[in-house]
Length: 138
Image (cartoon, rainbow, N blue to C red):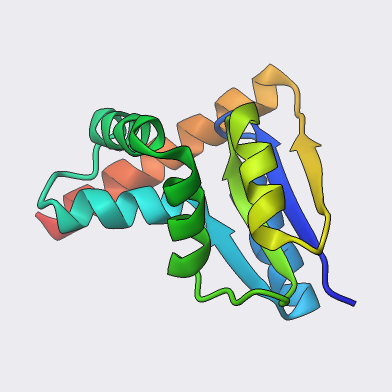
């Protein structure tokens, strides 16, 4: 039986780590709002900065919420009727749209909540790794 589950939570809460593990363990596609926005930013020839990601993500969302959600699912390679894990649910207004897109499967939402100290430590580690990778490329 097919299922659809979306992971929501603050930045650095572990949504991507969890959604990746769940999709791999269950052998299903994983759609990521973040992956799709990074793809669009790269396609536009922009630098992958947090500011560009935020700006382009907001622009796409405000232009057409339904089309944004549909493109995120299509970008993942997901097909109607397949099970799906969605990473990076951030806007409550996209929930009914995602429900419509994955129908007849009902979307389940998991909110990942960790304490702020752990979340900030995760973000610090992520920033250090990003800095090291950028230095290695120079």
